[in-house]
Length: 239
Image (tube, rainbow, N blue to C red; front, side, top):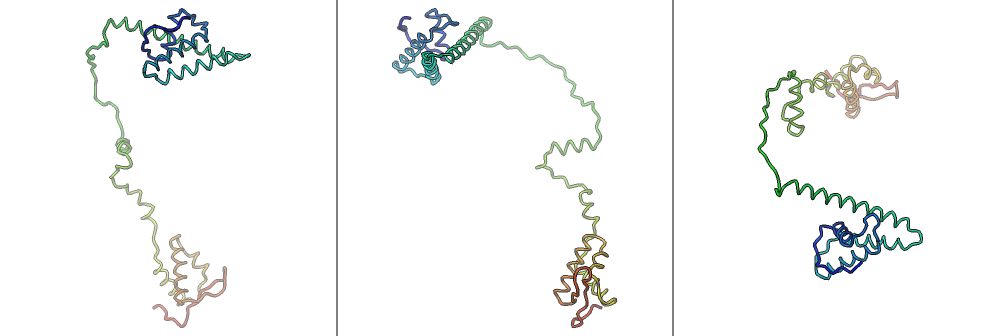
C-alpha cells in the first residue's frame, strides 16, 4: 500500500478514518490486512500530530487497539487476534451501514433541516364523570397534600385511648393507704397490688408505698408474699 500523501482531512472519529483508508486503498472489509491497516492508521495519526491538529483521545485509543491486534497476531497461537479482528470488522460494518442510512435520510429531507406543521385541534371533554364517597376525596386530599404540609388537626379518635384511661395520682393513693391502715391495722402489699383496677392504679400504689416508707410514716415487715406495712406510731395519723 502506498504511503499517505494526500491533504489531511478531518474525520468524525476513528471508525470514519478506518473506513476512509479501506475505501481509498480498495481493501476487503471482510479480510482486512491488519498489518497494513495499522501502519496506515498510525501514520495518519502521526501526521495529525505533526500538523498540530487536535487529536482526540478516541483516535489514540483506536491506535493502541490496532497495535495490540498486530502484536497478538505475531504469536504462534493467534486465536485472540482472530477474535479481535472479527470484532473490529463487525463494528466497521455497522458504522458503514449507519453512514449509508444517514445518507439516504439526508436525500429524503430534500435539503430541508426539519419539517413542521401546525398541531391538529383535538376536542376534549374535561367533565369528570366518576363518583366518589366524601371519605375517599378527603383521603385523596390528605395524600396529595403531603405529610410535611398537613396542618389539619388530628381526629378525635386519636385521643380516645388517652382520655378513656383514668389517671391515678400518687397523693390520692397515699391517703387511701393511710386511711386503710388506721382502720384495719397491718396491710399486705400483695392485697394492695391485687386490689388495683388498672396499671396506672398499680403504679400509683407502688409509688405511694415507697413515699410512705421514705417519710417513715410506715414500717415494712416480712418479705415476699408475707410483706406487710404497719403505721409508725411515732408519726401522726391521717384524719
